[in-house]
Length: 51
Image (tube, rainbow, N blue to C red):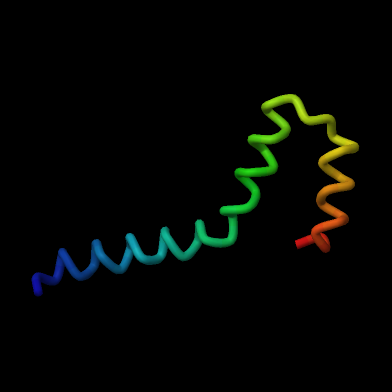
């Protein structure tokens, strides 16, 4: 395998790993953007176990 290709692949994998922990945050932001009130979002967050 080409050195540049291996290096690019490693960088891509690093980016994917850094985004894995943020997948749930997008859902909360989407709910907020759709107009769900913040107190409702806080209650849902607490019911889910603050994860």
